[in-house]
Length: 404
Ligand SMILES: Cc1ncc(COP(=O)(O)O)c(C=O)c1O
Image (cartoon, rainbow, N blue to C red; front, side):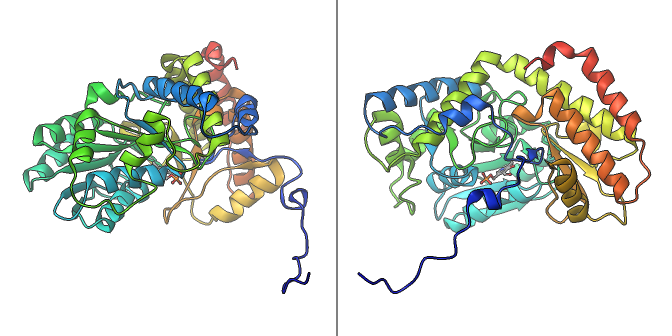
Protein backbone atom coordinates (compact mmCIF):
# COMPACT_ATOMS: atom_id res chain seq x y z
CA UNK A 1 0.00 0.00 0.00
CA UNK A 2 1.40 3.39 -0.94
CA UNK A 3 1.70 6.25 1.59
CA UNK A 4 2.03 9.82 0.28
CA UNK A 5 5.30 10.71 2.04
CA UNK A 6 8.63 8.86 2.25
CA UNK A 7 10.40 8.32 5.62
CA UNK A 8 12.94 11.08 6.47
CA UNK A 9 16.69 10.55 6.21
CA UNK A 10 17.53 8.62 9.39
CA UNK A 11 19.82 9.87 12.12
CA UNK A 12 20.45 7.70 15.15
CA UNK A 13 20.75 9.16 18.63
CA UNK A 14 24.44 8.20 18.74
CA UNK A 15 25.00 10.69 15.89
CA UNK A 16 23.26 13.44 17.86
CA UNK A 17 24.47 12.89 21.43
CA UNK A 18 28.05 13.76 22.39
CA UNK A 19 30.33 10.68 22.63
CA UNK A 20 30.87 11.33 26.34
CA UNK A 21 27.84 12.55 28.33
CA UNK A 22 28.23 16.18 29.40
CA UNK A 23 28.39 16.93 33.11
CA UNK A 24 25.29 19.06 33.72
CA UNK A 25 26.36 21.82 36.12
CA UNK A 26 23.87 24.45 35.00
CA UNK A 27 20.60 25.64 36.51
CA UNK A 28 18.90 22.31 35.71
CA UNK A 29 18.35 19.61 34.68
CA UNK A 30 21.01 18.10 36.94
CA UNK A 31 22.76 14.70 36.83
CA UNK A 32 20.70 11.83 38.20
CA UNK A 33 21.90 8.83 40.25
CA UNK A 34 22.11 5.48 38.38
CA UNK A 35 19.28 4.01 40.45
CA UNK A 36 17.01 6.92 39.41
CA UNK A 37 17.95 6.39 35.75
CA UNK A 38 17.22 2.67 36.12
CA UNK A 39 13.81 3.38 37.68
CA UNK A 40 13.09 5.72 34.77
CA UNK A 41 13.65 2.82 32.37
CA UNK A 42 10.82 0.71 33.82
CA UNK A 43 7.21 0.69 32.67
CA UNK A 44 4.30 -0.81 34.60
CA UNK A 45 0.55 -0.33 34.30
CA UNK A 46 -0.53 3.08 35.52
CA UNK A 47 -3.48 1.55 37.38
CA UNK A 48 -3.53 -1.39 39.78
CA UNK A 49 -1.98 -2.53 43.03
CA UNK A 50 1.68 -2.07 42.07
CA UNK A 51 1.16 1.51 40.95
CA UNK A 52 -0.97 2.23 44.03
CA UNK A 53 1.96 1.16 46.21
CA UNK A 54 4.32 3.42 44.21
CA UNK A 55 1.98 6.42 44.53
CA UNK A 56 1.56 5.77 48.25
CA UNK A 57 5.35 5.78 48.63
CA UNK A 58 5.82 8.96 46.57
CA UNK A 59 3.21 10.78 48.67
CA UNK A 60 4.64 9.63 51.99
CA UNK A 61 8.19 10.61 51.01
CA UNK A 62 7.05 13.88 49.45
CA UNK A 63 5.35 14.77 52.75
CA UNK A 64 8.77 14.48 54.35
CA UNK A 65 10.48 16.52 51.60
CA UNK A 66 7.79 19.24 51.80
CA UNK A 67 7.59 18.95 55.61
CA UNK A 68 3.82 18.68 55.56
CA UNK A 69 1.11 16.42 56.86
CA UNK A 70 -1.20 17.37 54.02
CA UNK A 71 -2.44 14.39 52.03
CA UNK A 72 -3.28 16.63 49.07
CA UNK A 73 -0.04 15.91 47.26
CA UNK A 74 -0.38 15.60 43.52
CA UNK A 75 2.08 14.63 40.82
CA UNK A 76 1.72 16.44 37.52
CA UNK A 77 2.66 15.02 34.12
CA UNK A 78 4.39 18.20 33.14
CA UNK A 79 7.18 20.63 33.86
CA UNK A 80 7.35 22.55 37.13
CA UNK A 81 5.54 25.31 35.23
CA UNK A 82 2.56 22.94 34.89
CA UNK A 83 2.43 22.57 38.69
CA UNK A 84 2.71 26.36 39.00
CA UNK A 85 -0.20 26.62 36.60
CA UNK A 86 -2.18 24.04 38.59
CA UNK A 87 -1.82 26.20 41.71
CA UNK A 88 -2.87 29.35 39.86
CA UNK A 89 -5.69 27.86 37.81
CA UNK A 90 -7.28 26.19 40.83
CA UNK A 91 -7.00 29.08 43.29
CA UNK A 92 -7.66 32.07 41.01
CA UNK A 93 -10.43 33.03 38.61
CA UNK A 94 -12.10 36.26 37.40
CA UNK A 95 -12.90 38.46 40.38
CA UNK A 96 -10.12 37.00 42.58
CA UNK A 97 -7.08 39.16 43.34
CA UNK A 98 -3.45 38.08 43.25
CA UNK A 99 -0.34 39.80 44.55
CA UNK A 100 2.71 38.59 42.64
CA UNK A 101 6.21 39.26 43.96
CA UNK A 102 8.50 39.24 40.95
CA UNK A 103 12.28 38.87 41.29
CA UNK A 104 12.86 37.52 37.81
CA UNK A 105 11.66 35.15 35.10
CA UNK A 106 10.18 32.40 37.26
CA UNK A 107 8.47 34.39 39.99
CA UNK A 108 7.14 36.64 37.19
CA UNK A 109 5.64 33.60 35.44
CA UNK A 110 2.98 33.40 38.16
CA UNK A 111 1.79 36.86 37.06
CA UNK A 112 1.34 35.75 33.43
CA UNK A 113 -0.51 32.64 34.56
CA UNK A 114 -2.77 34.57 36.94
CA UNK A 115 -3.64 37.07 34.18
CA UNK A 116 -4.29 34.10 31.92
CA UNK A 117 -7.07 32.80 34.18
CA UNK A 118 -8.63 36.25 34.40
CA UNK A 119 -7.59 37.18 37.95
CA UNK A 120 -6.96 40.78 38.97
CA UNK A 121 -3.15 40.84 39.25
CA UNK A 122 -0.84 43.28 41.05
CA UNK A 123 2.87 42.80 40.42
CA UNK A 124 5.48 44.08 42.87
CA UNK A 125 9.07 44.09 41.67
CA UNK A 126 12.16 45.01 43.69
CA UNK A 127 15.23 46.46 41.94
CA UNK A 128 16.86 44.02 39.49
CA UNK A 129 18.46 41.04 41.26
CA UNK A 130 17.16 42.00 44.71
CA UNK A 131 14.93 39.99 47.05
CA UNK A 132 11.55 40.91 48.50
CA UNK A 133 11.86 41.99 52.10
CA UNK A 134 9.28 41.69 54.86
CA UNK A 135 8.95 45.46 54.79
CA UNK A 136 8.22 45.53 51.05
CA UNK A 137 5.67 42.76 51.48
CA UNK A 138 3.95 44.56 54.38
CA UNK A 139 3.77 47.75 52.27
CA UNK A 140 2.32 45.97 49.27
CA UNK A 141 -0.24 44.09 51.37
CA UNK A 142 -1.49 47.39 52.84
CA UNK A 143 -2.45 48.64 49.40
CA UNK A 144 -5.08 46.05 48.55
CA UNK A 145 -7.03 43.00 49.61
CA UNK A 146 -5.59 39.89 48.02
CA UNK A 147 -6.88 36.33 47.81
CA UNK A 148 -3.53 34.85 46.77
CA UNK A 149 0.12 35.87 47.18
CA UNK A 150 2.79 34.21 45.03
CA UNK A 151 6.50 34.08 45.63
CA UNK A 152 9.61 32.07 44.82
CA UNK A 153 12.05 30.78 47.46
CA UNK A 154 15.04 31.01 45.14
CA UNK A 155 14.94 32.94 41.86
CA UNK A 156 17.03 30.78 39.55
CA UNK A 157 17.19 33.32 36.75
CA UNK A 158 19.43 35.72 38.70
CA UNK A 159 20.49 33.78 41.81
CA UNK A 160 18.52 35.71 44.44
CA UNK A 161 17.39 34.05 47.67
CA UNK A 162 14.23 35.30 49.40
CA UNK A 163 15.71 34.95 52.84
CA UNK A 164 12.73 36.59 54.53
CA UNK A 165 10.29 34.08 53.06
CA UNK A 166 8.88 32.82 56.41
CA UNK A 167 8.13 36.41 57.47
CA UNK A 168 6.54 37.26 54.10
CA UNK A 169 4.36 34.16 54.35
CA UNK A 170 3.37 35.10 57.90
CA UNK A 171 2.37 38.62 56.80
CA UNK A 172 0.41 37.31 53.83
CA UNK A 173 -1.47 34.80 55.98
CA UNK A 174 -2.26 37.53 58.51
CA UNK A 175 -3.64 39.52 55.59
CA UNK A 176 -5.96 36.60 54.80
CA UNK A 177 -4.35 35.46 51.56
CA UNK A 178 -3.43 31.97 50.44
CA UNK A 179 0.30 31.70 49.79
CA UNK A 180 1.69 29.93 46.73
CA UNK A 181 5.41 29.17 46.81
CA UNK A 182 7.72 28.05 44.01
CA UNK A 183 10.42 25.86 45.58
CA UNK A 184 11.45 24.41 42.23
CA UNK A 185 15.19 24.96 42.58
CA UNK A 186 15.36 24.92 46.36
CA UNK A 187 13.36 21.97 47.71
CA UNK A 188 15.63 19.59 49.63
CA UNK A 189 18.63 21.91 49.13
CA UNK A 190 17.65 24.16 52.07
CA UNK A 191 14.91 24.32 54.74
CA UNK A 192 11.30 24.57 53.56
CA UNK A 193 8.74 23.88 56.27
CA UNK A 194 5.41 23.92 54.49
CA UNK A 195 3.14 23.41 57.50
CA UNK A 196 5.17 25.37 60.03
CA UNK A 197 5.50 28.40 57.75
CA UNK A 198 1.90 28.22 56.52
CA UNK A 199 2.39 27.63 52.79
CA UNK A 200 -0.87 26.85 50.95
CA UNK A 201 0.46 25.55 47.65
CA UNK A 202 4.04 24.36 47.34
CA UNK A 203 5.58 23.46 44.01
CA UNK A 204 8.70 21.61 42.99
CA UNK A 205 10.09 20.02 39.85
CA UNK A 206 11.95 16.74 39.41
CA UNK A 207 15.02 18.02 37.62
CA UNK A 208 16.64 20.21 40.30
CA UNK A 209 17.08 19.57 44.02
CA UNK A 210 15.41 16.17 43.79
CA UNK A 211 17.90 14.95 41.14
CA UNK A 212 15.22 13.20 39.14
CA UNK A 213 14.05 13.73 35.57
CA UNK A 214 12.37 16.83 34.10
CA UNK A 215 8.73 16.73 33.03
CA UNK A 216 7.18 15.32 36.20
CA UNK A 217 6.52 17.79 39.00
CA UNK A 218 4.89 17.80 42.43
CA UNK A 219 2.49 20.10 44.22
CA UNK A 220 1.06 20.03 47.74
CA UNK A 221 -2.02 21.97 48.85
CA UNK A 222 -2.89 22.94 52.43
CA UNK A 223 -6.29 22.16 53.97
CA UNK A 224 -7.30 25.82 53.55
CA UNK A 225 -6.35 25.88 49.87
CA UNK A 226 -8.16 22.58 49.27
CA UNK A 227 -11.35 23.99 50.81
CA UNK A 228 -11.20 26.90 48.34
CA UNK A 229 -10.76 24.44 45.47
CA UNK A 230 -13.65 22.26 46.63
CA UNK A 231 -16.02 25.18 47.19
CA UNK A 232 -15.29 26.82 43.85
CA UNK A 233 -18.42 27.24 41.76
CA UNK A 234 -16.92 28.89 38.65
CA UNK A 235 -15.79 26.58 35.88
CA UNK A 236 -12.13 25.52 35.92
CA UNK A 237 -10.61 26.27 32.50
CA UNK A 238 -8.12 23.38 32.69
CA UNK A 239 -8.90 19.70 32.43
CA UNK A 240 -5.47 18.08 32.94
CA UNK A 241 -4.58 20.59 35.66
CA UNK A 242 -7.88 20.40 37.51
CA UNK A 243 -6.73 19.50 41.04
CA UNK A 244 -9.98 17.71 41.90
CA UNK A 245 -9.63 15.49 38.82
CA UNK A 246 -5.95 14.87 39.62
CA UNK A 247 -6.92 13.86 43.15
CA UNK A 248 -8.95 11.04 41.62
CA UNK A 249 -5.65 9.41 40.69
CA UNK A 250 -3.40 10.67 43.47
CA UNK A 251 -5.96 10.22 46.25
CA UNK A 252 -8.38 7.55 45.10
CA UNK A 253 -6.39 5.32 42.68
CA UNK A 254 -8.81 6.07 39.85
CA UNK A 255 -8.16 7.09 36.26
CA UNK A 256 -7.58 10.77 35.47
CA UNK A 257 -5.15 10.47 32.57
CA UNK A 258 -2.42 7.92 31.90
CA UNK A 259 0.22 8.88 34.42
CA UNK A 260 3.88 9.31 33.36
CA UNK A 261 4.80 5.97 34.93
CA UNK A 262 8.61 5.91 34.40
CA UNK A 263 8.90 9.50 35.64
CA UNK A 264 6.93 8.65 38.77
CA UNK A 265 9.12 5.59 39.38
CA UNK A 266 12.18 7.84 39.00
CA UNK A 267 10.68 10.29 41.47
CA UNK A 268 10.03 7.46 43.92
CA UNK A 269 13.68 6.43 43.80
CA UNK A 270 14.94 10.04 44.01
CA UNK A 271 12.73 10.67 47.06
CA UNK A 272 13.88 7.40 48.65
CA UNK A 273 17.49 8.55 48.33
CA UNK A 274 16.55 11.87 49.95
CA UNK A 275 14.81 10.16 52.87
CA UNK A 276 17.79 7.84 53.28
CA UNK A 277 20.21 10.76 53.35
CA UNK A 278 17.86 12.79 55.63
CA UNK A 279 17.03 16.44 55.03
CA UNK A 280 19.42 17.69 57.71
CA UNK A 281 22.42 16.03 56.04
CA UNK A 282 21.26 17.01 52.59
CA UNK A 283 20.92 20.70 53.54
CA UNK A 284 24.38 20.60 55.10
CA UNK A 285 25.92 18.96 52.01
CA UNK A 286 24.31 21.56 49.73
CA UNK A 287 25.38 24.45 51.90
CA UNK A 288 28.99 23.32 52.31
CA UNK A 289 29.29 22.44 48.64
CA UNK A 290 28.00 25.79 47.42
CA UNK A 291 30.13 27.76 49.89
CA UNK A 292 33.24 25.81 48.82
CA UNK A 293 32.47 26.43 45.15
CA UNK A 294 31.85 30.13 45.77
CA UNK A 295 35.18 30.38 47.63
CA UNK A 296 36.94 28.73 44.70
CA UNK A 297 35.30 31.04 42.15
CA UNK A 298 36.28 34.14 44.10
CA UNK A 299 39.82 32.93 44.84
CA UNK A 300 40.34 32.56 41.09
CA UNK A 301 39.58 36.23 40.63
CA UNK A 302 35.97 36.09 39.46
CA UNK A 303 33.12 38.07 41.05
CA UNK A 304 29.84 36.68 42.32
CA UNK A 305 26.83 38.60 41.03
CA UNK A 306 24.68 38.60 44.17
CA UNK A 307 25.85 39.94 47.56
CA UNK A 308 26.26 37.31 50.26
CA UNK A 309 23.31 38.64 52.30
CA UNK A 310 20.74 37.38 49.78
CA UNK A 311 22.78 35.06 47.55
CA UNK A 312 21.04 31.86 46.49
CA UNK A 313 23.25 28.86 47.22
CA UNK A 314 21.31 26.51 44.91
CA UNK A 315 22.20 28.46 41.76
CA UNK A 316 25.35 30.58 41.88
CA UNK A 317 25.48 33.54 39.50
CA UNK A 318 28.90 34.79 38.34
CA UNK A 319 29.61 38.18 36.75
CA UNK A 320 30.68 37.98 33.16
CA UNK A 321 33.66 40.34 32.76
CA UNK A 322 33.36 42.75 29.81
CA UNK A 323 34.62 41.37 26.54
CA UNK A 324 33.66 37.78 27.36
CA UNK A 325 30.75 36.23 25.54
CA UNK A 326 28.65 33.79 27.55
CA UNK A 327 27.86 31.61 24.57
CA UNK A 328 31.50 31.30 23.46
CA UNK A 329 32.73 30.58 26.98
CA UNK A 330 30.12 27.89 27.59
CA UNK A 331 30.67 26.33 24.17
CA UNK A 332 34.39 25.99 24.92
CA UNK A 333 33.65 24.46 28.34
CA UNK A 334 31.32 21.99 26.73
CA UNK A 335 33.57 21.09 23.76
CA UNK A 336 36.85 20.82 25.66
CA UNK A 337 35.88 19.82 29.22
CA UNK A 338 32.46 18.22 28.61
CA UNK A 339 30.90 20.37 31.30
CA UNK A 340 27.81 22.50 30.81
CA UNK A 341 26.81 25.55 32.82
CA UNK A 342 23.99 28.04 32.15
CA UNK A 343 23.82 31.45 30.59
CA UNK A 344 21.15 33.86 31.76
CA UNK A 345 17.96 35.66 30.84
CA UNK A 346 19.33 38.98 29.62
CA UNK A 347 21.84 39.54 32.46
CA UNK A 348 25.64 39.51 32.04
CA UNK A 349 26.15 36.42 34.16
CA UNK A 350 26.76 32.71 33.91
CA UNK A 351 25.20 30.33 36.43
CA UNK A 352 26.39 27.14 38.10
CA UNK A 353 23.88 24.84 39.75
CA UNK A 354 24.26 23.42 43.22
CA UNK A 355 21.34 21.05 43.37
CA UNK A 356 21.27 17.34 44.18
CA UNK A 357 24.06 15.39 42.49
CA UNK A 358 25.80 18.61 41.46
CA UNK A 359 26.91 18.92 45.09
CA UNK A 360 29.51 16.12 44.96
CA UNK A 361 33.20 16.83 45.35
CA UNK A 362 34.25 15.29 42.01
CA UNK A 363 31.70 17.47 40.18
CA UNK A 364 32.88 20.60 42.01
CA UNK A 365 36.52 20.07 41.00
CA UNK A 366 35.56 19.35 37.42
CA UNK A 367 33.30 22.37 36.97
CA UNK A 368 35.64 24.82 38.70
CA UNK A 369 38.66 23.72 36.68
CA UNK A 370 36.65 23.82 33.45
CA UNK A 371 35.31 27.27 34.29
CA UNK A 372 38.70 28.74 35.14
CA UNK A 373 40.47 27.26 32.12
CA UNK A 374 37.69 28.34 29.78
CA UNK A 375 37.77 31.92 31.06
CA UNK A 376 41.56 31.86 30.57
CA UNK A 377 41.08 30.62 27.03
CA UNK A 378 38.75 33.61 26.44
CA UNK A 379 41.58 35.91 27.51
CA UNK A 380 40.89 36.53 31.19
CA UNK A 381 43.88 36.49 33.53
CA UNK A 382 42.69 34.15 36.32
CA UNK A 383 44.50 32.33 39.11
CA UNK A 384 43.01 28.92 38.45
CA UNK A 385 45.28 27.04 40.86
CA UNK A 386 44.40 29.40 43.72
CA UNK A 387 40.73 28.77 43.06
CA UNK A 388 41.26 25.01 43.06
CA UNK A 389 43.23 25.25 46.31
CA UNK A 390 40.47 27.27 48.00
CA UNK A 391 37.90 24.69 46.91
CA UNK A 392 40.06 21.85 48.18
CA UNK A 393 40.63 23.57 51.51
CA UNK A 394 36.89 23.87 52.11
CA UNK A 395 36.18 20.32 51.04
CA UNK A 396 38.96 18.83 53.17
CA UNK A 397 37.50 20.59 56.23
CA UNK A 398 34.10 19.10 55.58
CA UNK A 399 35.16 15.83 53.97
CA UNK A 400 32.62 13.61 55.78
CA UNK A 401 29.74 15.42 54.05
CA UNK A 402 30.98 14.49 50.60
CA UNK A 403 31.15 10.73 50.85
CA UNK A 404 28.76 9.51 48.13
C1 LIG B 1 12.55 28.67 40.37
C2 LIG B 1 11.99 28.02 39.14
N1 LIG B 1 10.69 28.01 38.94
C3 LIG B 1 10.12 27.45 37.86
C4 LIG B 1 10.91 26.87 36.88
C5 LIG B 1 10.26 26.27 35.69
O1 LIG B 1 10.54 24.92 35.63
P1 LIG B 1 10.18 24.05 34.33
O2 LIG B 1 11.13 24.49 33.28
O3 LIG B 1 10.37 22.63 34.79
O4 LIG B 1 8.78 24.36 33.99
C6 LIG B 1 12.30 26.85 37.03
C7 LIG B 1 13.16 26.27 36.00
O5 LIG B 1 14.31 26.60 35.83
C8 LIG B 1 12.84 27.44 38.20
O6 LIG B 1 14.16 27.43 38.40
